[in-house]
Length: 307
Image (cartoon, rainbow, N blue to C red; front, side, top):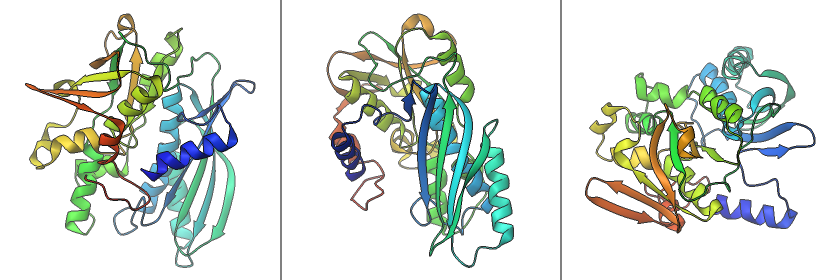
């Protein structure tokens, strides 16, 4: 998966301790910071999504990264490049959507330029005061794996859109266009946990998050598929289990905590000695390496994948 390889090359080249988590934790400034980009015909197609939804989702994917770090979303800046056929109405609706998706965070600036396609790049800043910030490296054997959010619905919505070749309206496409960052779940953990813990969002899929935490922490994560929360109507899709496990853009959260701190949370598994991800599904047990999982994840760089 080229994206992961590129990130590792960048991290090694810069010799940076900040690269690797959903956000860079700048402890001296008391903030975390993240940046994400959305490119037309890579992350979205304009015949499916409205300008308002595009603005909303553009903000929300960055708010989700802040939530994954445990910080409080505070500020956003927006750089957007637009083709000549985008008019004032598009800009107005886009920024109305962004304002809604930003929740309590403030949009404080950015840039706007011309381009052949729509390109959006957003920087988000979160405050760390009074919160314990997560890292993917902090999972330890004996801890429990908890999740927040519904898994697979966004990917199901995308499948519906691609199969129909036009915009359709149902709960799965709504989940794809209008995701919700798990801010309360993040706040509850970050304001109450006093030890190092792991947390990550599921923007690239539940198994990607589990595998990344397992790899970065050098542990094995064992998960009971029956415990994963998903919309039961997703079972109408022939590949619904793959959608739940590998489908991205749900923006749920996965956290690894001590068992005593998981009361009232959805526990889907535990951390063990070893490496990789173990999926228990009925009488079946499948152990997946990072390479196994990456074969089924979406790639931005055109490699073969099996969704």
